[in-house]
Amino acid sequence: MQIVREYTYAFGAVSPPDGALDTLVLPVVNAEAMSIFWAEVARRHPEEFILMFLDGAGWHRANSLVIPENMRLEALPPYSPQLNPMEHIWDEVREKWFANEVFDSLDDVEDRLVEALVALEGNEDLAASTTGFDWIIIPRCNQKDIIGRNLLRPKGGRDKSRPYNCCLSTAT
Image 1 (cartoon, rainbow, N blue to C red):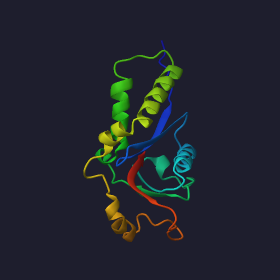
Image 2: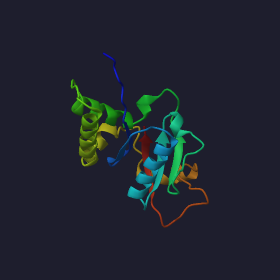
Image 3: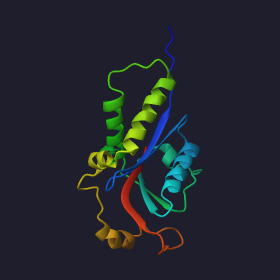
Image 4: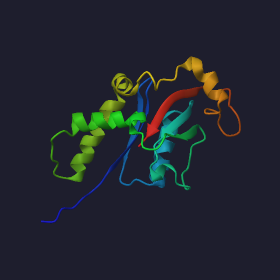
């Protein structure tokens, strides 16, 4: 008997202060897929400027990435998964939807994965409580400090008509 491995990939970004969660399931993980995911996040939040924190995955740093106009990328320190709030969402998915179960096909896995992600996207309170630790929340009153350090300053200057999304988001 030969073991055949098949893969599918879940992309996610979470806003710990309010629990807004954006996810997408794609068949590959590369710069093009990451760009598709970021475009989807930007489309879902057109009125916000998004500060997206990322881990060191190669597809987060590729030269061919397309970064939406309303998004700025910042890297998390290397070897620090504990700083990535999306890791807590992935733990929730593994523990609640995939614990001790064998699936007959990759389609069955994807169906369960989509079920889990849709449920979590619809439960902002759970996403916020799972990811919104005291040290990660950036209160709105600190926006001036963040903007002053240029973390939330989009290329070309600030568009004063667009509110800033001052949360830490991550993509995995």
